[in-house]
Length: 174
Image (cartoon, rainbow, N blue to C red; front, top):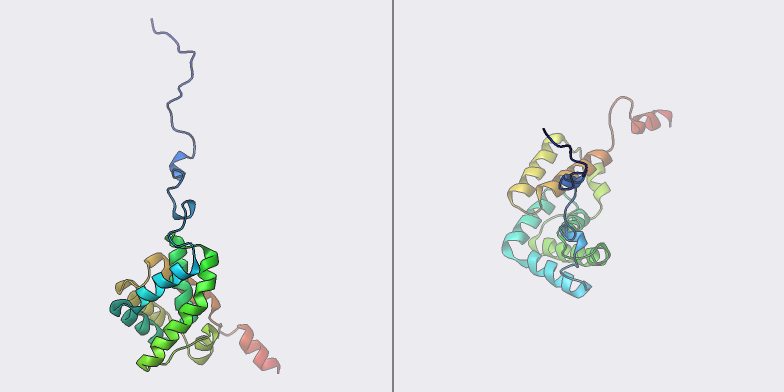
């Protein structure tokens, strides 16, 4: 005869356990690698100043991506990797923008400082976005997830030029 257990089974997994990580398993759950603005800027300016990354960044800038977008993307990646906090990224962005701007001036590359300028001056097509995306991923300037997020932001913020778009309707009314 088989006996019936009156005790609950306690060695089963907790519901939702597969959806969590151990404490400290994510970069934002650990102290940042660089806690001061000076250390963070030293990290970025040294990294950007290296020949390989400098060439890749300047080719991205030359392709029409605004310099502030490049700087924000770099620092966003640093935050996600646990290099520094969001606060330090916000403080470091203007310095990184000026540094990249100086590199572009020295190299004789035309650049865009306002992301809205590039949208108004030329048509951005899906082919252009895919080319920039592949360049960024291939040259390993940015992780693929970050590039995909930038692409989504560009698509969302590009003015619509279709039959029922707001710009056309406003032009016809005036």
